[in-house]
Amino acid sequence: MTRKDPDPHGATVDQDRARREDQARDRLLREGADSLVARPWRPAPVPPSATDLAQFALWRSPDLDGPGLLAALALLPAARAEVDGLEAGLLFVARSAGLTWAQIADAMGFNSPQACQQHYARLTNRAGA
Image (tube, rainbow, N blue to C red; front, side, top):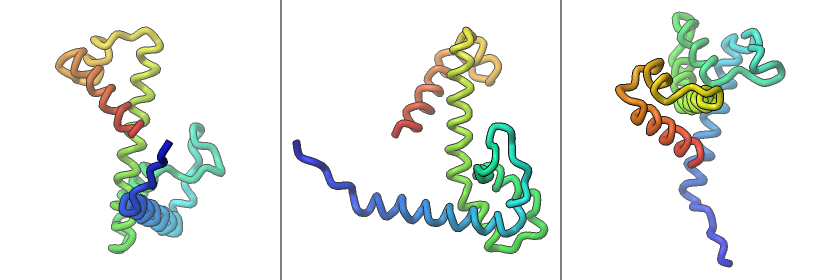
């Protein structure tokens, strides 16, 4: 079986994004986010999530300079991915608990159960990609 080599350009893009996110996290932790109280679902020593760091930056925005705000903006793709994972998880447990797609669609403001189900499929496909 022939093994495909990873796309060097794609790997570089991913590595650059990961490096920027790490630098952004470090910057916001130095700005005071390191004193955020641990969440029960993210106990120490797990660092704050990208979502928590972005919210911290918005809260502290009067005190942040341009690079601090850019650090928060650099974390938004990671924060979106976290929220997508949260949404997919909640949809999964709602279905596991016996809720119907109609009930879930109504709670989430979808026009139909099918639209909600398709949204869930897109979320899980995106997470698996």
